[in-house]
Length: 350
Length: 155
Image (cartoon, rainbow over all chains, first blue to last red; front, top):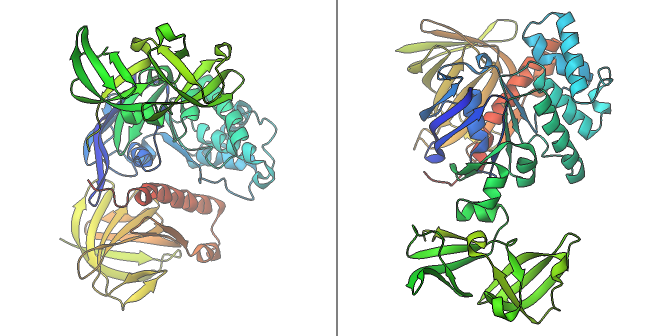
């Protein structure tokens, strides 16, 4: 069933175009992450969905009905963000009860619901505790419980874990994912952190400079980054300038490290080639697709990270522990399956 | 169309009244244009000049209003002054609102300053009023959050 639909939404502030032609959907019960660098328009998008601002163009629908003209408090959406601090000097119960009391629930129902959500976030006994005595992680859980309590149709979370340290964040992401799924909470999760997005979301909307670069599952994004931006943002930066040329056995990609068969026949002219860091292996001379000088090798427990200088580029690859690379300074031969290792993009406009 | 704005204090007593020109109206909000008619003053680094153009939006369902301030000479955006208020009463050509002292000042570059928190505390708000006011403040802070990020990024 259709939950949230964003259809061709654009928004400018004065002369600044913040969002351009944004379209995607969130199905009921689904957790979708909006991933992108700071300033890509993520928070403005949530402001539009929440109804705090109105789009210049396009429409936002909930269950096939347009939300144009529907006031923020009539949408039944919840918004949780990092600096949305809890009310200090109040206990956890009163903080969680806030939205329920605003909705004029009677105290008996308030008590039942607060108990349920505190239980859900793993703090069944925290109700009476002053929030100032809670740890950072516990405060985030109470804030989450407060957002979940009114049973929002859609819960929007904007960098909710942003202020916490890395270790605590990693633990809370898993808990959060668990809580959202257990309560079948339709959610939009905004973050600049790909690990957070990947470990939490069913699908990811990747944004850059107010536009959508790609929508898909974490696996789809990682296996087939749709643009140079997507590849770079996901940490794949073996990018080579190249041209397409017709060779004896079909089209070839001509790069500074060698010529490779082209698997995407629709592309012509100047291109940028991504050489996936995880799709290359060390080989003997006879299978060598290209070679380079090994500049660095780092043992990382589950694999080796190699830095290789080939052509005039520095490329990084991950190879299995069993690959047993030669010492730094020697020539290393590398091979790959072009269908898996190479992705070709039209060259970036200058 | 000329619209009259009446500002009331938390006791419901009228503290200011002025007129503006209607720019837009829908079921939940009304936007008007008015010109600053007090002497030039410096507001935490934002200069307000007599004759500055204020584009003011009031809502009948939100606990704030938003004044977008443009310089009198070249209409350059100076920033936004947002009042935390009870939801505005909009009837015919009259808007009245109860001001709750708490304000948010947003500069054109996106910086934000919360003003008059002590003054709000001094009206001794009930727990519900206190929470409602801060909820509104946070909603506003969120709404203006991306402005900081998008300076200089042209359409």
